[in-house]
Image (tube, rainbow, N blue to C red; front, top):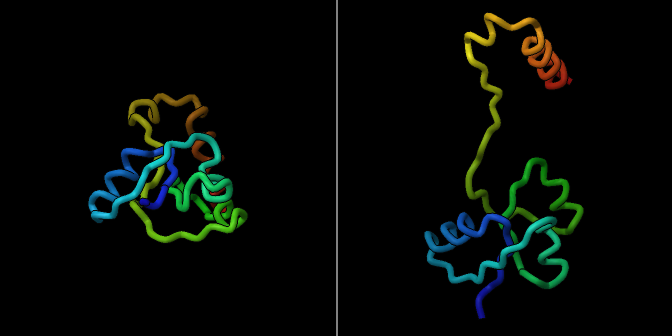
Length: 100
């Protein structure tokens, strides 16, 4: 019997394990995927992780990184020039939060 891996991102998980030539059964879960191993529905998960706090709280450990991503705030240059301070205020708020 193959290892069961739970994920919301079944195509990504399938692609990852196929590339490694590791036979696994992918179990589609939504919501709190980290509960898959706790409930016995799966032995491992593929999920998005920001800090790893939820993994740690559920007794899970990271085995591998599938890929890295970043989020970007993108603005139209014309919007920046015509801005009546709403966009600039938002940017300053973000910058002040990130400075903490």
